[in-house]
Amino acid sequence: MSNNNRAELRIHTKMSEMSGVSSVESYIQKYEEYCLTALAITDKNDVNAYFEAMQNKGPVKIIYGIDFGVTLLAKNNI
Image (tube, rainbow, N blue to C red):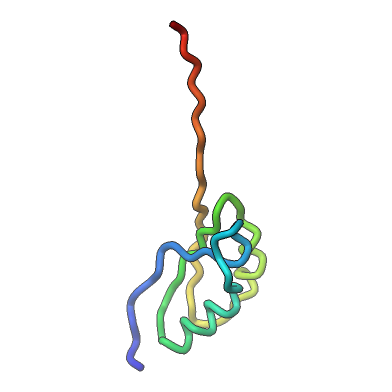
């Protein structure tokens, strides 16, 4: 395959609560197979997959992020 200058910017790993099913290593293997250059790990409300991702020494660049949900509560002062 040819070099693909493309990055998925929202990957949830198995560390995301009820959202992801694959490990960081399996994503990296697929990205190398498809010659993709970067992937962004944005697990839901945590950064637990970062430790596994930091072990990556291959050609795939890891972009670290978080899919963070915020709930705002307002008090009605009427």
